[in-house]
Image 1 (cartoon, rainbow, N blue to C red):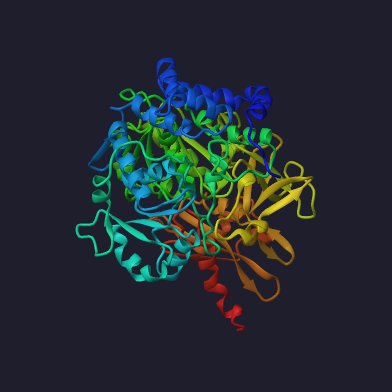
Image 2: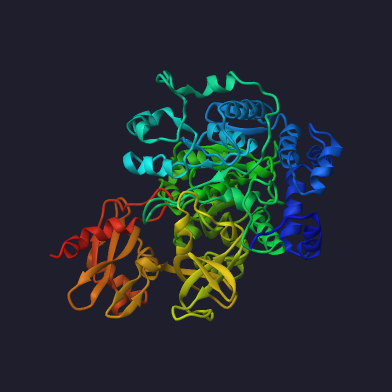
Length: 617
């Protein structure tokens, strides 16, 4: 279905859009974060006047070809807060006024390099001001920005970069050995730009020299939202996810149309951005800048981290970046930088909680309002303990928030403090569908009843626009048509309660089938993590001569604590596991392998036990 944009179509949808809680909440959030009526009117005025003049831009708006309207609004926001801190990166502190000049110079440099609309500019850098500057520079000229995982090496790195055929590659000087090793395989890259190098190799370009050598005037704008994360790649080569179409379709003619009607697409988009409101955007005010101050600790290349820097993109928030995560530095920055918003993976919270009590007691954490957690299952004990720690150190509200989503779906469900304060059982869930649609599909077909485990199916602004640039043939693997509607299957299993709260039980590929009985690893892991000596745990399948496969508990103990296999198995029985659900064995590990997004890499663990079977032994 080709969706036609028109002012008439939006007008028809407007009354129903206005009835949505998310519409009103998002509008109120923008109004508050932009500083009230005066600034809001000024920013909106810049959107329709800008450099082209009011009449020209009103004509663009009538044709729904927004041209410069959206970038005018964004730059107008920067100009409205010229002295507000935009990016804090170690010793570098850029105001929005200073950032504007650097972004314009970078955008003009990319245009001079010949980057055309929808062409890719790849980025492989640590969390830094440079990542955020490149994002804006690429967005202004209509390019796309693949976020390259800086942990990749060799053939996997080359394959991932080539997938998007980037014309320019920005990379951190620390990755010179990795890029040099595959440089000849990167057939599409014409320019290599090095960030932070003392000496730039011949044939490459220094980042700061590139910025300094270009003008800070308005670039030739072809605006698109350049967001282009890859999937996690925990089960194979990462795929490229096109947020630039789902976010940008109503903003530019460069974006591809969604596969739903205009009204449905607008509703899904408003719901997608509703998280600003749900996570407290109308309540968060820094006493100095009067805005959101977000601490970015997970890698910027990870799709989930967008929840951490989205306020910087749309709300004029201050982005404070950590180059590499350190648990005590995390607490110190919350205190010193007055942080009130952050995105984390569960392992970050676990490492913070594992700090010595005297270290945790040193820091004033009263500024924190919203810790947003996702990317992997978070043990309920960790959720409760992080709330207790922040409350003890000054936070005035419960800080733990959560969502379920992926690189393809963005946010779908949302868990808020008010949910689990009303019903403590809900803290074991990942919330209910607020930013998209979610239902449970029975294995035999048909929608499941509350309490019935099945496949978690999602439908969001990003899934209805989903494409895999460079891997288009893989799109059909996850999209399913049910009752005439398109749903995304992320491979997760779970159930909803009577109130619609989602409880995840594991991944379909990780399900353990013992003697024909389905066992869900998440249920076993939840019990293991209740044992006071257990720091981390994973339930995996191992071969069994009669039953086919049985559960094994892979356990990492807290430093300085002890527990035997017999004690852990007995504890599982005491907590209600019975029959095949009780681990057949417990093996102890110094550290369990985790992907950078926090997910345990179970294939590495299972390979230790299945290699003889797979080899025919």
